[in-house]
Length: 402
Image (cartoon, rainbow, N blue to C red; front, side, top):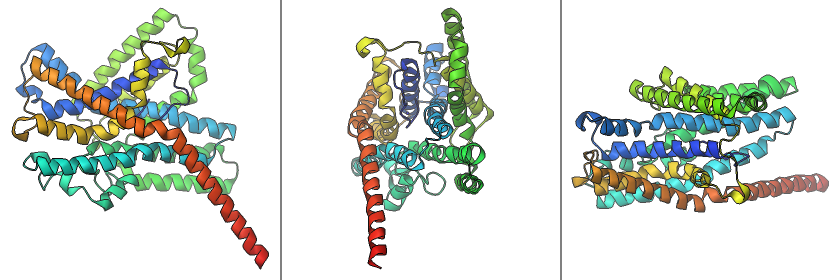
């Protein structure tokens, strides 16, 4: 979850990793708050309680931050490759799809297992009755639709895993940006420009407005990557004190915009103006953090190394936390009625324990999945390379036989 799926070419910027880890925490904490606690209107009116409940309700804004980071890492990589004339559509597709699928496919399988367990042992709970997503959105057709990134336009998100909607948005942006960049700027032949531009427009039409509505937010991150060198050179002349002040003010403004986005009803199907404000402020924060606030120490022994490790499992955490949280919330709620906890020392302690458990589960899941992304990428590339060579050899042999 820099972003939900992107892995940066350089992973030594602890500041950006801290942002990515914080965004992942806010997404998971926001969903946990909604599953466990009563709404703010039914909670005590003291400022600490209301402030904590408000803070843990910024999940949509945190996803927008992920999109900006994704645009920075992935969009920037695609643009640099095209600008150098070193972009390989095959390598890019292998890189992106293995990165997405190595977590998504096991996450769908885990969701099916968790939902089966929930329906079997907590069938009387609202989240697992026959009319809810865990029952109605299961089955192979929906699973395959999610693997093909057709949710939520053509199929629902699989089972109880409602968080999978954003992966389609990511996949769409990954595909559309290089096509448009090649069509409008980098392709040399007119026929190629026409073909790739047409393909990009076709994808825009296919995915539709709901998905494309957040494309500008993702592009803001890509814009920071495009201007990376210029931004770094300009910030090099800014005093450390002023740079720190700018970072703090930007962070406070971003938090305020995320609150406004929550109030305005930001969601996967509703993109208010505040969502774009969040994107702009997230992009400016990324720009201000390009000169790493906490550079890597010798041997990597640094206090914020923990953030880097947590950020490295953010995609896995995002992909599995929702069905796991659903099951946990039903199991620990009285009579399976979620959203019934009143804020108290005990309930907040339980909340923290659940967040830690989910984070640990995401980290363990990442060891079995995204931790092997590079190996999977090389394996797929080698297999496709062998397959291509075999096809060429067989075709040549057939020509000789004639």
